[in-house]
Image (cartoon, rainbow, N blue to C red; front, side):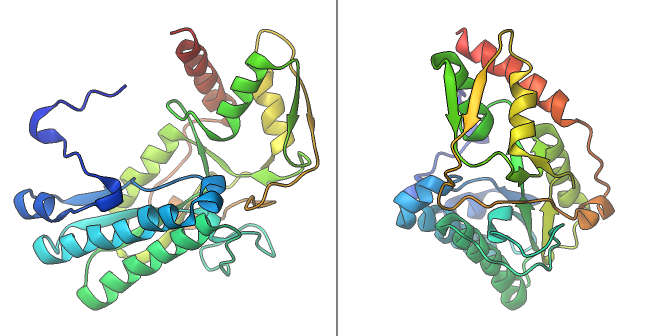
Length: 269
């Protein structure tokens, strides 16, 4: 667990009833990076009101506090490629028509509109990063953590989908680089920026790479059942991100190797 007993460096906030006024009234910030919110498509199907509260209402509250106390503070909203849903063509550009297929995707799209509202009417410096399939150490959910847990407890593994679905993965350290570059070089005119690597890989291939790292063979099959809210094929056009200075530092194999080693260490605790 992370130790948050670090004096004035941390502020504990009840996300279900957040109030950011005291923070921005009493402290000075150059940049606010909103990494809060819910990040689960299945959970947004089960608890849409909670997802709405965390992914839209809290963004509004943050920006309203910035508007009142620190209008020069730059605001980076971590959005999601879920706003696109199932696009009609690939690669996905920032001008691709939005078509979310889950409450999570709808609410992330709403958060982008809130950023646009505060930029247009109150001249705040905002931008939204549409993050595609991020993974890395610390993430105990989503595809690769699920694969790791299943390989521990099951002899034969059944996975959702056909395996032909595709994603554009980005490793956590590359994601941090992208956020840093956006904080330095974005125009902050409420634009949206794809954050990915511009490389399409099927789920079947990514599963194969991950399980090849194990010290024993892992049997798996795809059920053919598509989970509600999951998109089918994704690959991003990252021209805008590259213009900010981004170049990937880690391959998928390197990122997955680091993730696997971390997961093993966590499991041995």
